[in-house]
Length: 291
Image (cartoon, rainbow, N blue to C red):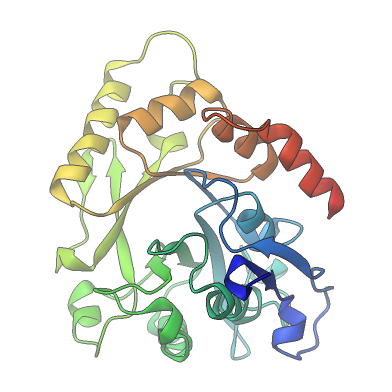
């Protein structure tokens, strides 16, 4: 079998021989192009049993990772209490993504960038500078803000003003705009550095999948469509979304590109069920049982 037809997602322990208080995920053969791509990404992916690998196997088009700068490490976690030594952005995400790109030529599909949203859980330039230095070491994978590589990095937490990012040579990541109850909110500065539009469904919308839409929910859906016109070519994501088939249909029909989920198996079954082919729940169950 040709290498580009089948790549092995190397466990992060095998890429970086670093100690750590957690076990590395097992080696698994995964096709370079999954059976189907789903309009979803794994929100807070680092909390899944096998960070990154489960999302890839189920056909997700992105992952989100939170990080903190602790003792010189960019540790993955939601807070300092769960940011374990050795469990880093590089080890869990950037190194295995580079390995996959080198074996396959892409992450999930040729010519399509895999979304990696990164949230700095604190504030201040030190953490951002450390992230930029790390991304610079992976420029072959992440590209630049204007020309993303096989992996597209978007900062969804604290970041410097866009005027400061624009002076970098070159900027390596873009930032997000937000859809709120007040409208489409853009960060001040050069909007070419905006690579993603985010909708926090739990804060902005109320519809749970049945009954009539409120006027405010209809307005929010109009803003989703407006985002596509105001910022053409940018991805639109929604997160904190009820795991409900009708809600998913509503968002995808309105123009949302990827839905964030913390329940990979259930969401993949609902989303894949919208297309023809083999039973998605059976496929997902079989995969996760094997892990």
